[in-house]
Length: 479
Image 1 (cartoon, one colour):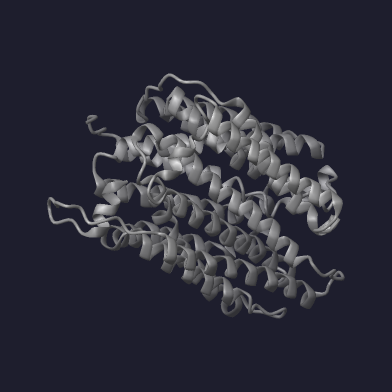
Image 2 (cartoon, one colour):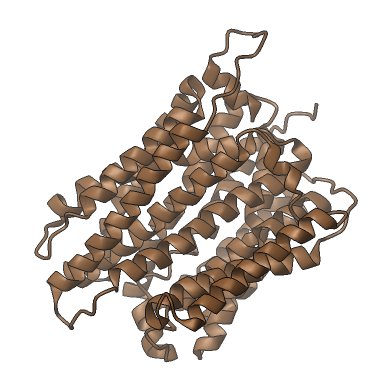
């Protein structure tokens, strides 16, 4: 057993902050998009790639990031990821044309894809010796992801309102440099292991995911049954099929398919996929409702989402970890997704002449509670059955499924929201579209709750118990 790191809690701050920043990068550009469109000459259809370039690079390369973390050592990959993220931030901030902006966002996504799985590997090494400490650490680390996604909207609004849009990228430079300075003293040096990188697997899965998201994004404009859409989906399926073939045939695959025999891995990742597919469209369209229907500016719309962030932090840190230790993951995943569905369903009742305190605040807080209950248990379930040597791979898989769920969910709900043309100033038409997106996101959460109830199995009671652990504590310990 490795010696306990006396500075592990300080190290956790660095890891949680990294997770916060990586996920925040998906949302901080939200309220800045109109200014970026004006200054860089984005077309209305092209503007979405400021978001998609990051998500596709991030989600598509997470498996590679997990593999590199296992082979090269987690601290080395974590450090490299931050260097790349800083470089991408500089490119995005300095961009004077649309294609350079998209390039910068893609580079940021590559950095994030290295940081996220390396962070999880380091966390497991720092706290894996003690199940109770691991549960607390996972609560703090897990809270950083949805909090970062929600807080990004608020911070992006503040920065855009009082500075300018390039500052939503410049802010990553000092934070990244401070993180790099703290790495040698706080994060353990992790030895990698011998092996090779599955380049063909990495290229095929990234290209397949990118083409699938591209097809979904373009389908409402081209038509879901058009030849172009059908060919794009067929190409995506062919690339993903190639990835599976490669994984079965190469000596050291990027994602050994045998890992899916790990108890609970597939169902936990399914839950993470549907969680992302419900949560990200919810906050995205809630932000649009606040700005385009209720008339909020950049700063007020960001501030309106701050109560969700506070609720997530309170529940994840103060409540979810304790419930996880007592009841285990399955009940929290099921209940969390169901509660989220109720909150998102409440948002579908928002009115064109709505009031924040009535139409937004109660339902958004309910959705935040649901997210708080489900996220950490789903992640813990996905990580629980793998050994330390595969923690980077498992982390890459679970982060990939969440991001892919987010991208596909957002593309699908956007198709629903824009299915009918809306004239400028038609608040009722806008609201109808947003309501449809909220209904779709809530339906995804309901499906997730049902599937979690039916498919996730609770771990068998151990033959012997030491210390009188509850079933939930045993499940956490299994992680």
